[in-house]
Length: 109
Image (cartoon, rainbow, N blue to C red):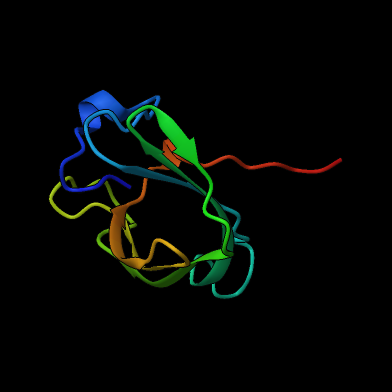
């Protein structure tokens, strides 16, 4: 997640925080559950700012409360989105475009 001053073109794929603060989080979900994406999920957060990286000490969580947009067909005017809140030392609401290219599925053997 980018702060209002951060430049997406500069901060991705390797965030440095040079253009503004960047919050990078990994969220583990289990979409095979009945509720799918909805729910409260633990997360690990990193904050990048001015080429420095820090890890907030308090526990973090991402609460996904709604699936918004069009999840059935490709529609650039109404892309699939995850809506909810971030809880922890950095907190607040989010309305994030879902990108299936960033999903990693790990099947333990």
